[in-house]
Image (cartoon, rainbow, N blue to C red):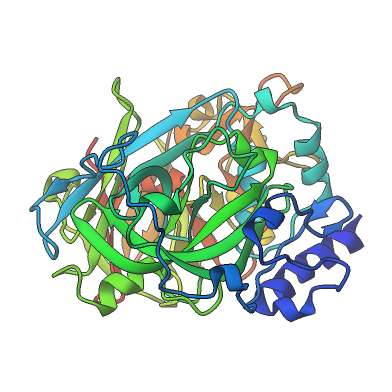
Length: 464
């Protein structure tokens, strides 16, 4: 099994880097309708996908070709308000984050671990894949997905998109996707600014989930901000994991170069390079959802001092390609006992599109050494007693630029492990290589400003 996993991981890297490496027996048809029914390459049961720049068929031979049908002015919330703010390009505005929790969510701890590792091109233990495959869909019920409403086209067609600082792509379902019935689909005929681009686009993860299609260009609207001519991937085929997902797609908020679609300027860099915001930054505030399913907000172009305590700690980016900074150390602070420092440090990525905290094997072992009875299961990865909060009441501190940023111990304990009474999944998992990934487990406790203009982040404890 391991040799096939290695081949699959290498295949994904190679395919993303150069689709010319695709085997001839798996041609990618450039016609969207044909692509919708196309089977992706499979290695030991794991679909892999790549993209390539291809000659555009005569049917789509003009980049600037627009639909002959005029867009409707009102259709299924196509022209609703997207956010609150100053009301003009260049000001600031907020995008409320909604949260969805469902028995059909694919974001269980096991699935979240796998998706995070494959998203960052890291290897996945074969037994994790087998464990996820054995779980019925209804067992994926602890997952929480955050999304914001984003408009695509003119007038805007509104979609629920994952706002992801760990990705660079913008993608959603296209109207040719017959299996995307749960999602709202983008209709080119309803957009006066639609342009066909025609590149192959695809993503694939080690848990078997995938989406594939072609690229277009169109206007993306978020709050009061309108970004024209953005490259967008339209999915015309996707796996069941995506089919049952409430979120319609993804809006990447990373630098250019972090994308499955090669050579594109990301949404974030389009904002920065064209001065669409006076202050090219955005702030992220995530909290537990309230009775109205409000779970926080993204504030573009400004910082909300009412959302955090004390002062922001500004940290320069270690690797500007990612939102990557340096971590000094980690410690466990037990109420009434004191602080236990862990030998954990190095580069970290702040990733709003990741649920968990991911470390390399040695770091994850060091972290769980401080958790009583924590074990590294061959099948389930790191697990811990469900009453860990009572055993070690307190918090985990992540020291960045000399300042401690805390996460309550209760947030490190995830859902129960099926069949193991009293045991729960850990929110800290292994599998990373040369960087740590701090996902929503960290961000729910800490307010973060992503400052593209100055290549830095600001962090402060959140107010809840």
